[in-house]
Length: 106
Image 1: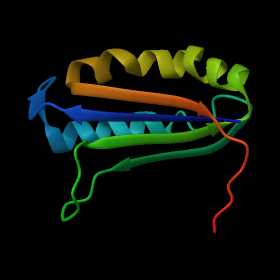
Image 2: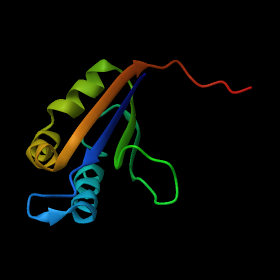
Image 3: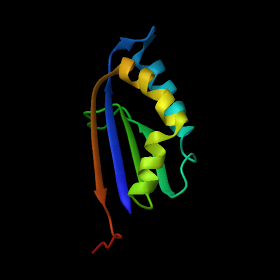
């Protein structure tokens, strides 16, 4: 399985709206992608909560069955269509993909 994590820091204002408005729109656009790729095991989008120490404004945290499922998500037209908006409103973006076997906590 592949974990896919993306974090964004947003401009104070961009694309004709303030940060809070753009965050809500970005979350809605990403949430609409939750079921676009077969092999999606987990899909979570969250806006940073005030009161916690946060360096980024929005996070996408997903698990895909394999690299092919991640690729299908990345190439899906609905995902591709949101990229221009995300590019316009983001100040920074960080991404990390890594293979996971399962979780064991002690």
